[in-house]
Length: 77
Length: 430
Image (tube, rainbow over all chains, first blue to last red; front, side):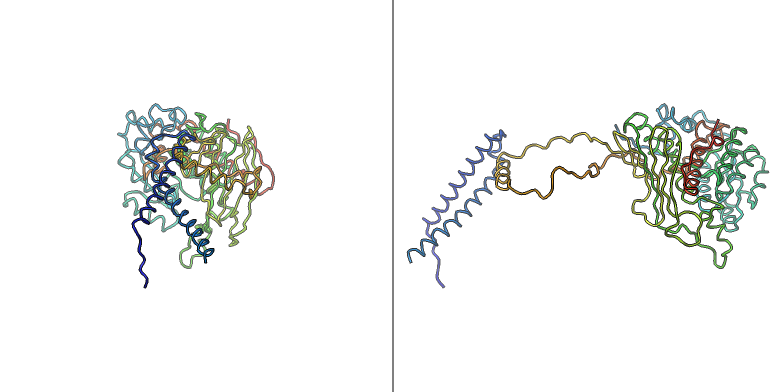
């Protein structure tokens, strides 16, 4: 059976991607607070929604990257 | 309006003292003002007819004996099993008779309870009143209109108490409801609906091999003795409708038939009637014996609200608005708006110009919090004894029973003759 080796730079890249999506989700939250004129407390109280959004963005990014590298693989072949 | 919790004793006493109810319903004055009532003299009571209802009334009288100083001194029934049971239920202390005329001869009986089959009410009640006894008579008053009028004439001429067993007049739910109506809480009453639905044959079993007792035991099923649903059930609800409207109908029309229990009975097993009041209000009534899904109810409908008496609920036509829930977080609103934007092109499945006029939402509120175990049938006996102690009838109480029976019998007449019936002049009370 072939061993899969996950290098630190791969883990670091994924953490950066997740952090990027977390920042984007927080930015969207700030926009929402401004647009809907709700409380700034939601920067804290809406964190569960922020985490959901981060999670979904990350799942979507995996799906997109999977398609991208798949296509590239077949083109190179 | 604040919901009140009422126990029987409180209801009869301090809770009603000085309230608007006492002004509206003088039959409570004697009950509420117990301190001024002289209980030292024992009221001696007889009971004629000790079948199922009579036994219950006897049981209540026994329960009340010490509380309000009464004693059941005589019982009467011409059906042997009931006669024997009545003797047993009085511990053998009461004198027992097969013939009510013997009971009347006992000089020191103050009051008599009548719970015999309907067709016997009139002559027994009249004999008792003429003999100077106060009378409590189970509803309905009598089998025939002319007997009802004769009872009324005797009541007025003797000045004795003649109370008819419409126990809802002693029920806190109904009293509170009338207070709400008088205060305009449900607006103008524009329609009353009432129904009494059962799913049984209303037959009582005969003793083994005694088919000769059919008409005696199942008297409710035969026209000679009863008008069936009208006199045994509807009369209660007609009384409620009249009481709540504060007036009596001007006409009635209706239909009835035997469409299910084709077992030799003579009274209708289903009826549907419309009673009209002079202000255009209709009282729609129906009763049946082959479906009990909707059970028993009186629905009092005004332009501001509705009362459902049997389930003790009041409803508002325009319920007070509930406080707005706090808005969801901005991020949730954003997601909903994005979702709405994506699916906004959905094609509606129905034409939005038609909205079904379904029942107004809301569970309503209790009319009154009644104490568990409160029994208005017992309360009405207590009211009767209070009138007996006073020695004179309570204003307005007899007339409730009179008009309930008159309009129950006129309803039967309307169905039998297939025409609209108005109140004959000879039945009007002066």
